[in-house]
Length: 426
Image 1: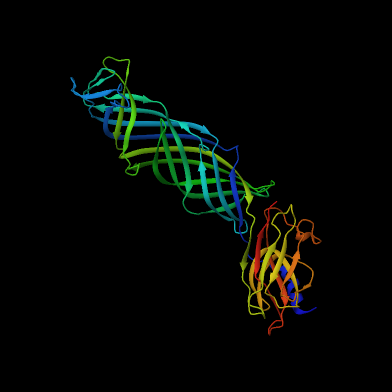
Image 2: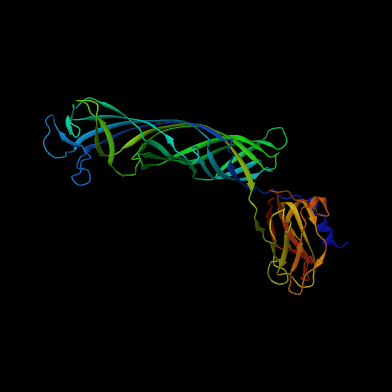
């Protein structure tokens, strides 16, 4: 047997470094979350009646002092706000995962976690207001200053409460003892975004930087990988200038009358929100189902052959195992030379003849063929029911492909194309 053929037949005994498998994970409906949110803040500002001589001539007017004056006057008005939310929900979420079981590591990226699943949650809001003495007209009432007045407010909801990952997060994998089961731990840097809907007026709070500690279980025993993450997060932070310098203007407040009681004065509040104290507790179980990302890319470069360039390699057909129409084509080869397409379960990068061996692990060789006058070689591969049982590929698995061929250039007399990495889908 020629030494080059002998060398190629030994590839199956040589293992190269494992490469990570890429997955996209989406939340399962069985996911659940318990949220507790508390927000407090001071809003110094002023109120004025909603009277408008054209648009609302019958509206409320406000006037400073016990006896008032004339016209619709601005009244200094300081508000202390306390908002609370207690919600049970089925959260939504997605993330990408590069999983390397050989190294027992992974990298998580692109986490988007929405505990409210795109919905809203009602907020219990109480405003405690402090003001100077003033009068209202339509309805008529006296408001004595210096006495805090609590105002329960309805029509308030959280319209957005989301976490978005801000940087890739490396994690570790530990086998659980049962085959196909692993423990995962990772800390994910993220930003928390909160928006509040106040009677149709949406206000967004500037994003808050946080870290999500995730621990869970990876289950590879089913038809698709599944991860169950447990998230217990407590965020307590003072957020300065949460509205990014944006003032609050003409916010409607239904103000109960004091003397006499029983009516409502409709006033408009304008002010600022200098800072808020935010406290968020989340106890969530995120169950996510994984789908392998199916793609083909050149991952390994060989050396120029006698044509002066590297032999290239590309796929034909699709990565769908159901279609089973996958094929390979190698170009920029010397014409009329014998060669073999081969593929393996691992990648490699080692000198091999006059080229580079890019394929390792368990290697499968196809039959010998001859390059065309145009310097090409092509072959369709049956990866579902191949003649060699070692050539079977399952959904989500990755294989590494290359073309070996003889070459008349001085040296070993044989070389290789570049290497192609392909992940297959169902």
